Image 1: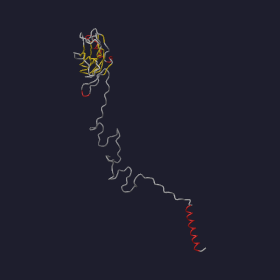
Image 2: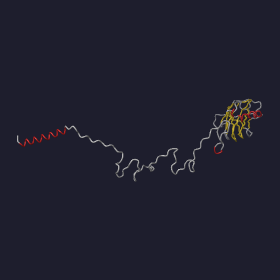
Image 3: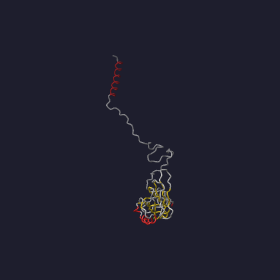
Image 4: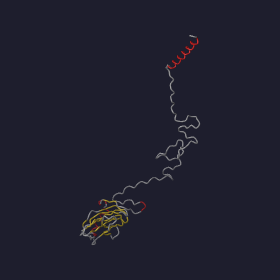
Amino acid sequence: MTRTTRNHLSFSLVVLVAAFGSACSKDPVPPQQPQPYAGGYPAGQPGAYQPGAPPPAGYPQQPGAAPQQPGAFPQQPGAAPQPGQPAPGQPGAPAPAASSPFPGIPGFPAPAPAGGGAATGSAQALDPNLAALAVAPLGLFANTEAPGMAKDGPVIAGNFQAGQTLESAFTFQPGKCYTLVATGAGVTSVGLEMQYVTPLPGLAPSIGKNAQTGSQVSIGGKANCMRPISPFPAQAKYIVTAKAGAGVIAAQLFSK
């Protein structure tokens, strides 16, 4: 073997040993770990935005958003007014909402409607025992308007405002004679009317109305009681109206 051949073999052996040693190394190089995201631009760089700081000049705003003032918080209900706003009760402050009135007490007139106009709809029905101011004089008035007649149905009573009504149904029987009386306390003008009840909407033929005025009125009083013309029983009703004033009205139907 020549010297040249021995030199080539020695060089090849050195290379093979070095490669084998690198492959068998017990301390491999650890892979590079990803760095956590800091959540913002690096501090100190031009144009960097720091959390909690106002945006720099020229930073784009959201469409329609008002400029945010540093340290401003939303106004909480009941909190102190902001500078420049009047405190409650001071001139220029909005007035508090008006509270609702207490419900009326049975037997006493309800508060007048707002604006002073006449009320509409049904009156507040009352137990006759709570409407003694009108029921007590009703018996005395009936003695002169319906002498010798018997009560036909219960006494009805109500707490009225001007324009309100109260109704009661009865059967208009052939062969009988009817008188309706009413008295008011606080109501200065009472209205009475008898009507037929029909299945046709808006059609209620009148049987009769009171001719007197004042707080004591009647239909068919004294010797002028109302007699049905039809030989058949008919469904009917009477309507009590407070035409003026406010207070309690009691009414009673009599027949014989």
